[in-house]
Length: 466
Image (tube, rainbow, N blue to C red; front, side, top):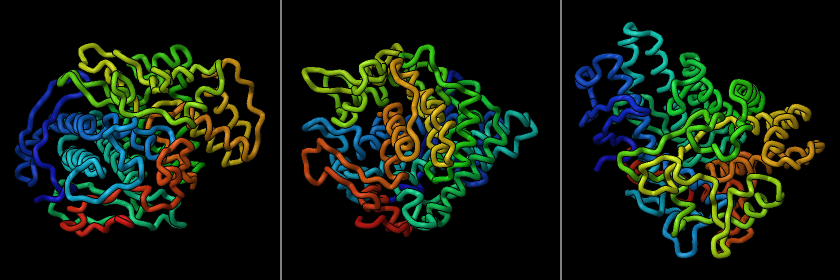
């Protein structure tokens, strides 16, 4: 049996955002095969489109964004539910195959996309003379997409950057090549971050500021992602610089907020997936929160937080059904022709509201309270017309920024990582199982196990306790 990390198997390349589609029944694995499949700039573009589609189908579905909310303190499984119960209780199990007890399926999906991107980066320069501007755009997107995938992997399968004083603790393999027979090893979290940052910076240098649609990565998308990387690293100066630049270029949405979030009218969206209409179903986040049989419910803590002000429009991101609170942040029926109307929304993955909150947090850490308050209140007072200007300073201001971040970005897949990068424990006030009430910072169960096949076949070290 082949190891998950090296298996490319068969992949189908689809277009994104209305381009034509193409099918390659087997991926090229040698130089000769690459010459057959990859013959011009157009074929490189098709490969990139295929990587986007692999990302859409393989792992950026609803459960992947719910996972960081659920292993933290914003979401819990419905009583008797079948999804992520083991993850919720921090009791994942290392295994050879993908099961409900681990994240092997996501590991496989991420690395499949990364391998597909490698076909682009290995071949694009051969055809640059056809159209240098277009070639640079394709290569820039590929570099940023590669970095993004590794960033999500390192957050799920390795401890946060500040887990050790120099970030020398085990990270993940950073793959830039298509040769799956080449040896692999886990490098340190610091090394992973260094490679992520370089790929993103190199990509930014090649990209136009804005992509042709929000379904492609443009320069502002890449800068926003890089701001997120620097924030998670704790480099507040760099994170602030990129966040402010993006916030100026793509201001937050005031007209149409919040009803246009997760639609094609969301002007602050920097990157979003459209729901695929073939097939007519999808796994976007709204599918798991709503409907006759929702899979996840909001915790008491997040309900209290979102309902604390009667004039905050974000209180309507929750509703009650037969006395039970449910999540309604993702709109219903935005796109026609989808079999599940609750998943028929756009899956926004990066938006400029995050940049305002990143800027606010960074300015606090850099002892620039006035600037922090400006970005904080832009978010607060947009959502709540009755909110008074912030006057807090010091630790109180930090707490307000983090509180507002939890509110605005609730159910969007960042809560657990925010707690970990700040060195905070997970505390659940309404967990029925005593073992699920508290996860101390630096607990080895905070991260998922490496798939057992890659431990045995590729010699990758397993995460502690697994």
